[in-house]
Every structure is written in structure tokens, then in C-alpha cells.
Length: 256
Image (tube, rainbow, N blue to C red; front, side, top):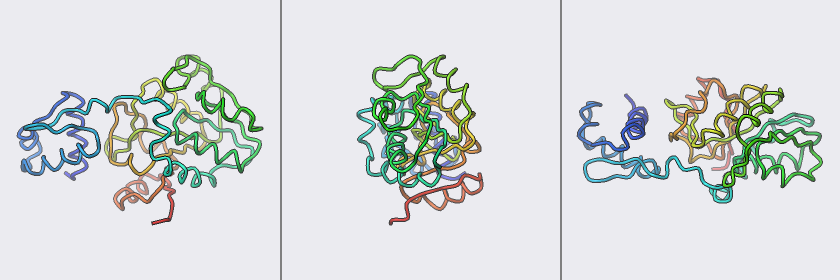
């Protein structure tokens, strides 16, 4: 078993039991306690666990869904690189579906600057507000508005998404794992992203480098549902080979 596979299983244990013990994990995986401590060190650094005496507990913030305002400022330069990298995937006249992620918002900002005659279907109040005078056609999903997330969710939003077949779905997520797939933290938002994927001819996932090798609370999609992953920098060779094997096209900045 590879280290990342073992860490994913440890995270599963954390979600299930809220805590883990070094001795128990060492016995379960037939490795040394020092190996388990290194695993827990990495999970602690990644913000998924909090180490304590003899083991670790699930980080209380792992399942939180922060406000749009706070999300927008995280890794903002990475999001702008991603926005530049996504332009070649969009053509004039395309129909798009986008989520409420701040990464998708930055991508749309760039797309709208250089592409014309777009139709954009979104559950994001921020997108509808910011781009209402952009000259592009905007369609709101409607639904119940979340005050912190600035997003529309619920049955009405789902129904609207299912009415349209689009060229491209563009959305983000909270985490990527080779064993756990694509995951997120907000269940209502996740349901809409799954529907967007189903209605799109081309599915583009936007993720910055910090989201690789992590797992969030809700399983969103498997990699066979994704056509492109657009990120800000080249991931590890292990990820490059993994995505190639799963026929996911990887786009990233060439800057070192």
C-alpha cells in the first residue's frame, strides 16, 4: 500500500470515528508507529487532522463551508493563473454552467473579457450581480438563497439545471484524492455540480495546487466524469500519470 492510499484510509477513519490512535493504525496497516506519526504529521499540516497525545482528531474546520468573501481571498493569484489557463477551452457562442466557487468567478471574469455571445447558467448570486452588464446572456437557476455562500440551491435550482444542455460545465471543488475522487464540503452545492456535469458536453474542473492529495466530507465525482482539470502549477508526476491513465486532460501554467 502506498503512503497516499494509507493516508486516505486514515482520513476515512477520522470521519467515521472523529479520532484515531497511532498504535491501532500501526497494527491495522502493518507498519511502524513512526510511519503512522509521519502520516498524521502530513494530515495535520494539510489541515485535515489535529495531532494529540497518542493519535489525532478530525480538524473541526474540515467540514465548514466558508463565506464567499473569505473564499475569494484564498490563493487569489493561483485562481487568476487558472483563469488564464481555461481560456482555450471556451469558444465564442458557447453555453456554460458554473458554480459559486471563487475560482469559477475569476475564470468567468477572464472569459467574458475575451469571448462573446456566451450564455451563462449559474446558481451564483455574485456572478449574476457582477456580470449583469457584461453583454452576455445570464440565466439564474433560482432556488433558495444561502446568506453566507451567496448561492441558490434546492429543488428549483436543480430543476432549472436539468432543463438545459450546455457546451461546458465549469466548477471547482474542495479536494482531490487518487482514491477518494473529487470531494466537497457543501451537500446542496455538490448536488448541483453533479447535475451540471450530467448536462454538459465538456466538464472542466478548476483546482489550485493546494487541493491535490486532500479529501473533503462529501464525495462529489469520480475522475471518469471529468474531461479537463485546470490548475495553476504542475502537480506531482504521480498525479500526471494518474490523470493520464484516467483520460483526464491536465492544463497548468508552465512557469516554474
